Length: 358
Ligand SMILES: [Zn+2]
Image (cartoon, protein in one colour):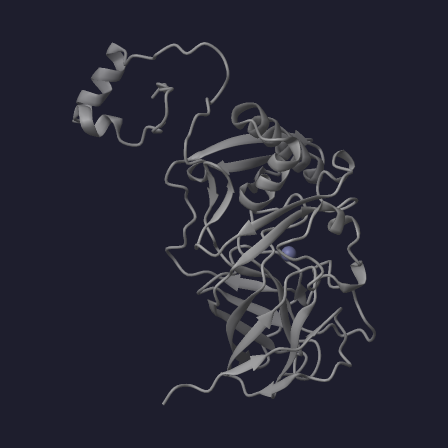
């Protein structure tokens, strides 16, 4: 017999532990949520940048729910397994004035509408982002009474924008009120670690989740477990910019700024397009946070999104690097054939060939 599946259509704005549950379920239940896009329906495939300027912030980032999990009490942990996502047809990425990592440098509204109906996200001719859906916002009610903005993440989870919370991930949320009052929203078709311009590929879709309850397992803040085999390493490699500063936020701003400059110089993108592309595809990583007084952030651009790869690692005259005698001796010592010695070298397609020092 097919497993009974509940579907949630109702959504709400803000975390509020006095909301009536849309559904009550036993632990173990599978629930499907219909999630509207993060603009709450204010943007459509026909919208323009003027519509971004007119967004009503009282109606952004709705979440579907809440679901009451029977038996859940403060001090328990709610496990949420991400099972599947429905198909996506369209999405949007915006630069919203006053919002985003480089808000002071991008004062004007910007909007990119994506056609996702062919199972891929084409940014421009020759630039394609793989679709990797996840919910940007996922959490439970807070212990404090009243309505709390959805925008910042807190001890209840919320708008965490963790792109790894995709199929197979298991999220562990601390329970703060009876029934937990779980909600989910802000589904993204793709996003880079950092979501730097403030939005991802924002896309309405359905999401199927399974709930489990861990009685008496108290967590201070959410944690998650990821399955193996997730598509993490880009097969074509990365072009990485770095930024250093005594403040991680400032270091991240520099790394992103340099990546935007790279995308402009090497791929001819506009500054706004480069910022939006970084938001949906570039991953920020803290490379070190110990070498006082400066911390270092790296910004990883995955090269497989660039279908016709013209980029140079650095500008300047190309000088082919030939294997020196020392290289050849090392290769011989490791019994590498000519073929296998070249394995692992970055492969550059297109008219320009670059030899990398090995
Ligand atoms: Zn979002």
